[in-house]
Image 1 (cartoon, helix red, strand yellow):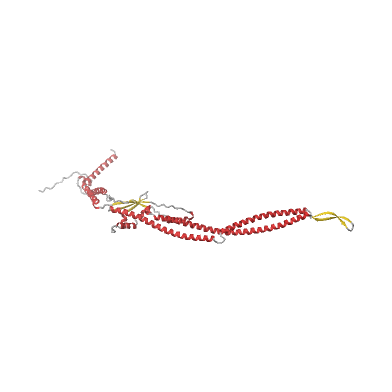
Image 2 (tube, rainbow, N blue to C red):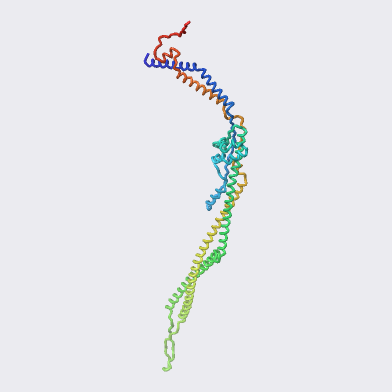
Length: 445
């Protein structure tokens, strides 16, 4: 046999000896173990059945429905509309907000007064400890759980609290909607005043002399006159050019046509008693005609030049007048446009406020709480208590009784130093027992 096999055999022997000793201890103290286990079980049974009061739970569930708001955006007055939408819409609350409001002091006080609970036993703090509120995950449901030793009272508290909570939400929303209506009415009144002021400014501006319409018609009239005079100016320039050309042509003809005509004729000579041939010069009728024509054209040319100068001065005057009219028109048109845009902006704002006011009054007229919160399942009177769990208490008592009694048995065995057998003596001294002396009673008689 190898050394390893010897060690394994020794360990097996020791394990067998230890197990045997454990069983001996358990058998030795079995009545103690049984007695303590029975005592623990009996105590648990008495406490569960006769001492501990039963505790019941009543549950009710609320369905949360978020109100939807339709918002129309207008880029020109988006900032104002954001404000109006904020104050006019039904208040939006998260599930966490709803849950946190169920156990507020006002509601708990109303429940105590409504059910006429004994105020020496029930106050806001004690009632709050009986109530637990939770949001059921992945749903819009809120569960209210009431724990009480009276099953009927637990159901009444749950149902009363859920009803009061719906009223509380309705009153809270109605109060905010009333504030919103008052706020928007102030805005509407203020906007009416502003609208009337701007409208009056625009009417007064349009009724002033030299209004935009008058200046616009004047600009059109002056523009038409200016166009007419410019056409006349261009026509006169063409006509003057034509007359200049005609004058130049006549001058050219005059250079070619002699001013006088020379011809010979027989004239009598009185002193000589005979005739002689003399040269006579007479005005050239063709030249005279050209001169007359030239003078006529020059007179016309002077008249046309004077007319052209007059037209040119008129054009300059009209241009100056047109510039002034256009400047006045631009200035007044800008003012009128500003007033018109301001009036339109106030009209849009006023229309928006009226629309939101109507929506808010409509929302205010309905029972918002009932449309936001709905009691899905009212609480019913529970039949079976949730505490104490008698079977579990007894089972736990049995297990604890066994564990404590076994621990006590081993503890007593550990502190027991008496020698009751040769094995105990050998175990305590570590020496082999050579023999034993039988007990003998001393008989003196």
